[in-house]
Amino acid sequence: MTPLEPLLRELLGEALRRRRRAQGRTLADVAAQAGMSMQHLSDVERGRKDPSSEMVAAICGALDLTLGQLMSLAGATEAGRTDRAVAPVILDLTDTLRRTRPDAPADVGPTGPGVMASAA
View 1 (cartoon, helix red, strand yellow):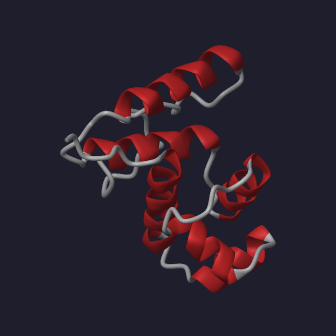
View 2: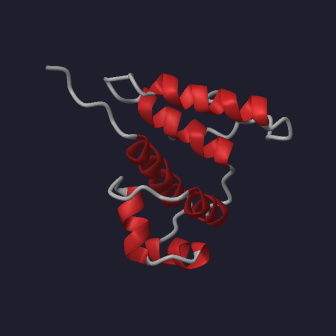
């Protein structure tokens, strides 16, 4: 039996938590700036809640992070795992963002400057 692949919400949650901690910020601080409860943000970071696209945008805004950078961080999270089955999904989503949003920042993608050195 093959191990279960990580869910996208788990990868995004791990990436958000890494970014928040790298900034030295608390759950309370980021949750207040994003307009949500500290418990909800904690659940998102732990991969227990599927955040809406609006919620992801609010958290990214609070962390001064673009959606493309978040996807890159999530891809870096996946690259650090032994089971890499989800990495192509992250890369496909990043590629779709590049194609559909020509105004997207140039650092969208797993090798751009949006990837934090500690996450790579």
